[in-house]
Length: 336
Image (cartoon, rainbow, N blue to C red; front, top):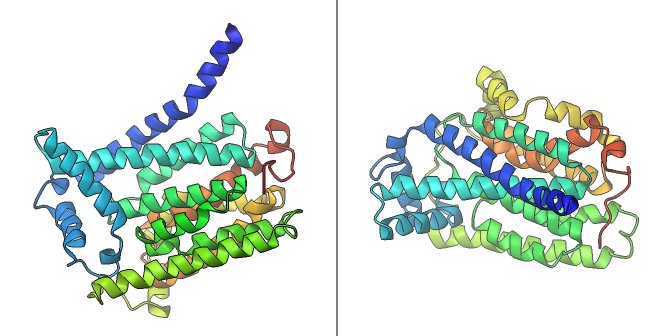
């Protein structure tokens, strides 16, 4: 009976932790933007409606998926006769997003070989970072959906379920253009011991996924046409790079969001599973280069994908001494 109780508690622990951390992050995110900001006619609502009406600026006009789902939550709140349906719908959607993100992160970290204790620590640090990555931000639904899609894709690769990658690539492309790296995730399998035997399937999945992702990317831009640029910052390129490097806000909010995890992760790179090391080289250099050249680094939520997918599990595997805490130093077992 005691064993049954322990198993029941162990099964309930991840969803409970996910919900608790989600409640904390949502409360802090909503407090940061302010409840009036979310009401009908205010900034969040105006930007949300502009995407749905096809009048938003570049690149937000092409990030339609999350805004469409958020609209569904708002309409549900109206059907339930909630007093302020827009804030209620937006907050409910963000709560679902954050809960799902934390739960998927738990599953993903466990599959990489992180033991339960360090997993909780990782989720706590992730919640801290998400709560601090709110510089110049509204609720930014597409950013958090982007992390969810990357986690789902990473888990599919670890399970050997490469057939899911084309579907996820297409769906994620409707959400945000930064999902264009998802089709490259299966290529990590080429570095594993059985990569040669799986080479054809891996390349087929990656090629099909990239084709679908590019088709969605170009199709959205063809459907909505060119939109006015949305950044009131220096031009993309070296001017933007100098702008980002020279602002103290860039480094302040980047550290507040990522903390010491990038340094701790890279220091233990040799102890990572093969696929995680490959994802570091596939994701991290390209992600940082593109965002330093074309984004505002102080908006550090933009770096949550490499943080969640690579830095947090990499640091946990190194610092927690994962060989003795639940891992073996070998590639995680599983198909593919």
